[in-house]
Amino acid sequence: MLIKDCVFTGIDFESAGAERGQTDVPVQIGLASWSVEKGFHEPYVSYLYTDQPITWGAQRVHGITTEDLRDAPSFLSLWPLLKERLGNAVLTAHACGTEKRFLRTFPGHAFGPWIDTLHLSRAAFPTEKKHKLEHASHHAEITSQLDSLITDRTWHDALYDAAASVLLVADFISRYDLADLPLEHLTHPDLSAYHRARKAT
Image (cartoon, rainbow, N blue to C red; front, side, top):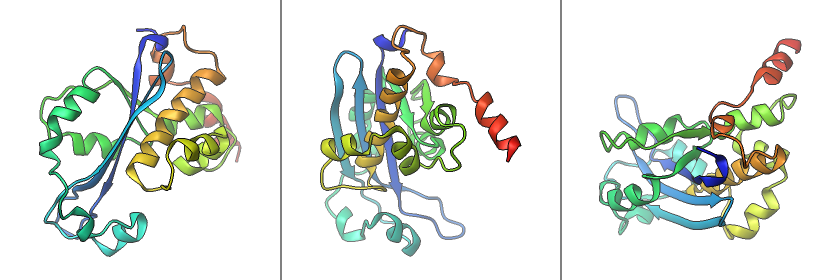
């Protein structure tokens, strides 16, 4: 599959946090898509209802309260939307372990392939020491674009972070002129320069 033929959908979850012995659950989901043909499109965000308390530590990060979730849909009820949006998309997330874990709520969904934008940041900016989503967006100089597309939101909001992830993919495609190349250039970026830089420090 060529990159120019793909629809990339960024996904991000914010979570309740988990006390010892608990399983963490999502409390907000954000989706945003991008393609060579259409550019940035279809941003979506929703709180997710849970009766599990939001930990103090999690609330300190994202600012979501139990009151915010009062009339929110359940995660399971969003299955039709997720199937439609993710079923034929290339999924993108930054350090995507959390996103993959929460999507296992739907056994056998077969969503993918995945692009981890943490790896793209390390490939594109191998000598930079910090590669969190905020740092990667700064390195790629997409923060102003992000703010113009996703207004009145900031880091650790699920929509803002999902949009940042998919815009990083768009930047990587443009930066290295990858549109006519196979998708593997994004799913398995060359990290050799990053590893050499780590060994040199």
